[in-house]
Image (cartoon, rainbow, N blue to C red; front, side, top):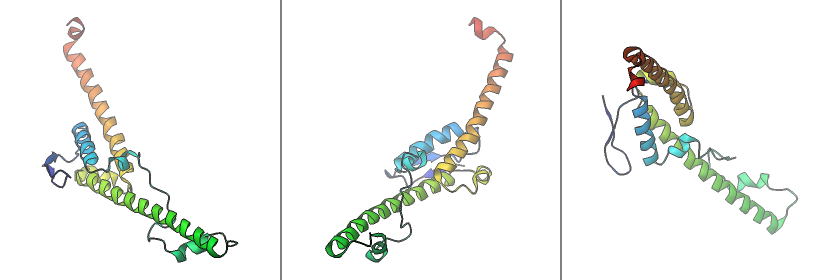
Length: 166
């Protein structure tokens, strides 16, 4: 059963079969990587964009939040400027964290959406898209390599030395 990625930025339809195991991992990975890049969330999954440090993760900071963080010995206009500067820095950090969190949630949802139930049960409990991606790659790439080696060994047995003489 094919899942359609109809919500891509360019509105084109791209069929991505849900990941069922090592049998379709290589194709799934290639299509999923492309889709995550098109949705502009691949840098979160790959780890190229790290979670920003942010003191205020859940609410945009206001002056009252910042005042206790500024050196107490500062007074008057100097203290006010220090508060305003710190507030600006913290608001920017909050906005970066908020944007990263949005992109992380999108990436996690996209990956999870294209996993078969039999695969998704093995990654239940992983909290980030990067952890999810790394676990899938570790699990199915290893199986894919083992399958390849097994098939290669069978081919050598079947063909004997005729491959070397060809």
